[in-house]
Length: 395
Ligand code: FAD
Ligand code: UDP
Image (cartoon, rainbow, N blue to C red):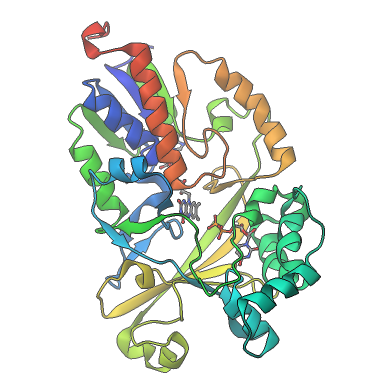
């Protein structure tokens, strides 16, 4: 079938992967078309104001953080930043705990005051194993011992992944820090901030700055392929979908989000729990590691955005099995799943005029900054390969 139109680059997916590649190529003068099956840009980082007037992250909380000044510099062309020391709590045995595990957690656990030296000495007595952790169970018990592992990690991980921590890569739980001081920040990266006016505003600015990028929402990959002829395709959707699931679908984890909003008037009886008026819970995120509770966490993003509004919204997250047609939120960081992905990766590597970029296209549990880094590198590669638009042959 004859395509309706030409473009230099056809880009599938308007998340960080697709938009960053498009912005870089367009800045060099190339014509790009981005399509996405969703009705909005931003991919999973999309945020919006809900009916209560609260800025929420529609696909789960997105805490931007990075150690790369190059990535901060690049994104700062499209946004200013609102610095956030992301802090969370864990709720178990009927109480809130400081989390990730730090000296405050240890004092709560012991029921008395302590100090870093005592905590460090105690850790030496409970740690199990040593050397390189082979899985997430070993990663945690070699740091904090079995009791804290069972209290905070085992149930949460079982709910989140429907797999035991011993069947998941060490990096899954290993990314949660342990500190013997009182530093309560959830994350370790140097730069921790949210886009000042939200992610959707960031994406809007990025695309506005990109003359030469056409954006088409509500368009499936199959339709885009019929509509546009291109010299190169950039694909940021699921790699197994690209290849028509010929080796079967890869395993993913999906989520169900349940939102509930409250006006400030309705929050009065929560004030003693939240610790300040206008909030429902004491931190931006509270994790629920116990198996008896069906959700994994409750997020109240207003703690992080700093938005001034007379209401708040909390979102409960229920992990669920992924089925075809649903959002494949998480690739599974486990050896079996990686082996299955390798078959698709081989097909992908053989595609001369297609780049696979992003979390789903490379089947990796990547954070946003890693995806931005990957997209910048891919754009550089494409610019080296195709040179400047003066060599264009399709127009
Ligand atoms: P996506 O954002 O998934 O974008 C891909 C786009 O492609 C989607 O919009 C999709 O609709 C579109 N698409 C797919 N297939 C097709 C098709 N066939 N046709 C048309 N369109 C298609 N990262 C952090 O750094 N910090 C966090 O706190 C954080 N929290 C997260 C919480 C959750 C619940 C999840 C799921 C992820 C989180 N992440 C976080 C990871 C972050 O979402 C990703 O790193 C980032 O969004 C990946 O960008 P992407 O462009 O690769 O993919
Ligand atoms: N995790 C846990 N208990 C917690 C928090 C995290 O067991 O209270 C484990 C769980 O397996 C989770 C992983 O550590 O998937 C990484 O946690 P993170 O909060 O970074 O997950 P994400 O935000 O990517 O869902």
